[in-house]
Length: 112
Image 1 (spheres, rainbow, N blue to C red):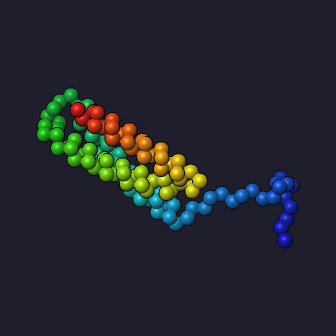
Image 2: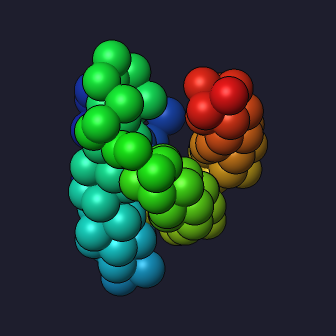
Image 3: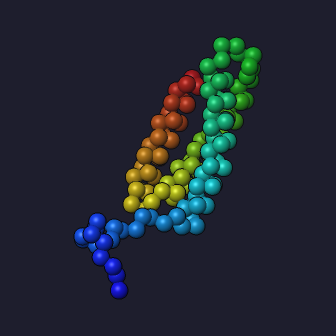
């Protein structure tokens, strides 16, 4: 038998989304991938805007940093939205994918 609550005359409020094991794993993996992504991205930006060419004379940091940022960004786009509730997951995939595309285009424009 259910009890009537006068605060909710239409019945109880729907339960909030539960944190399932898959969402928890997605948060942990996203955090593990996001840390090197941010560190390498900061390193890459510092090499791109450095006024002294001796900081990266051959450009290997920019080459390998760019490839690594693209791979880690792709992993974040694929894993990150799974940590969100199902009703916003499709929108999160779209926004994160377009953000990664804009980041890659900006990165290649900055490397010229």
